[in-house]
Length: 286
Figure (cartoon, one colour):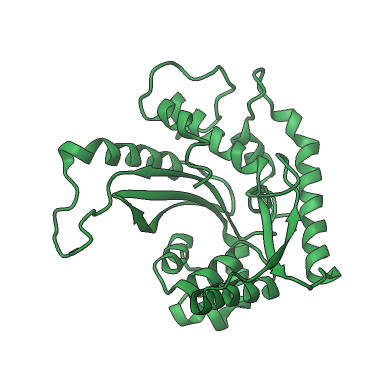
């Protein structure tokens, strides 16, 4: 999980670590009175804006983007049976639940137009660790996707207006290939790339042979490749529609972000990300 460690120090600050946060212009939000909480929220939002979540938070190229993830030792380690009711021991794991509570409360206080922040527990656990992924969803883009792709999402009873948390959790805890397809749509990949992605995984499962692929890269503030990226078949040549169209929509959003970013920098070069989004997150720019 590449982002678990990227915000580890921030989680220590928020969740009771020693030392005060760096001096910054605090979020001008009445519901947020805790300085650690404000710093934490600004930090995860800055991470998202500097990476591919920019295309959800300042646009609608991606209906959903991942932000950061955390790992907590709260999962059931009994691989034989999962019928018992008492899985978590407050004495041993209570601190982890308390930290999760603090993170959830901070996310609940984010109030930005058309954006929802969802903390998703991954279905799979790893030796007792549960990965918790924070995602951001642009609600209007999700509603449009649920309408356009009702032939897929309709099988789960998901229609425009569905709660983003319900949509994401429905996919996470569903069949492997439906999960892959659903995430592909949510992450803004073109239809042909989603089809290829699902079929490639299926072929790998059936034959054990890895399906060769190329990758279409879209730049972010942090780097030119490796973040907003999708796979396509070997031998395929990207086309004006949809590939170039997605690329140039994203490029316009990135250029806009670069134009306004310096106006929200603190003295220590951290970003007043919440204030930036408060001023510019709506209306959505495609």
